[in-house]
Length: 229
Image (cartoon, rainbow, N blue to C red; front, side, top):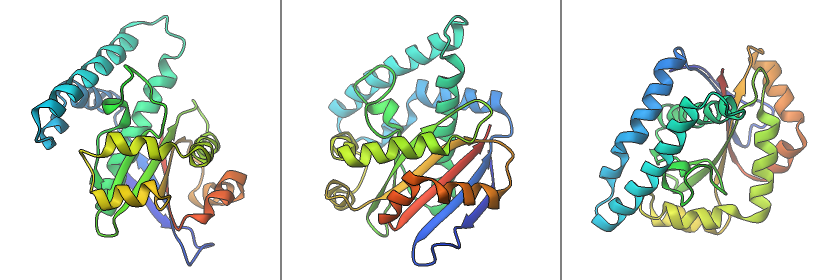
């Protein structure tokens, strides 16, 4: 994975709104890394209490088994979309951690209570210096720039305050001050999506015109992460 673009939206000089573009480089290696991360659950080392490690180990293993089954089941019509969304989520989160120094928090897919899929945001990162959580949502559409779907989902989740429910699961991984800010509605947004080879400036212009994006401008911190896949 390599970051090929990190540009600020010049139309909003008083806000911190950025476009980051990611090139997966090698999809096969990326998929293997995602499966290895999930199978080994190396992120569990961050947990100090045995009861937390045991609970999250079981949840992660169930998700791994479900994902592995999708890999081997060629009759699954949702195969490409499910795997594509995993790639977008993982690479977007890695890019944010790499480019902005955010705390790396496990995907909600790993720590949620369902075997596969989650009812809230796809991923979170934390800017520890500002005690700000970033709520991330990922969408993959084959051959399309899927920012519209991601923005639509984010707008819905913000309205229904899904982040307040997610805060419970995030408690072992993030700072309590950041989580209190999250719960009170003070947080950043990460818009992750599959992208074509559209030019950076045109992509930014299209995002700016999106109705849901304009609604989310009430937040000062927005990261748009395009994964070229």
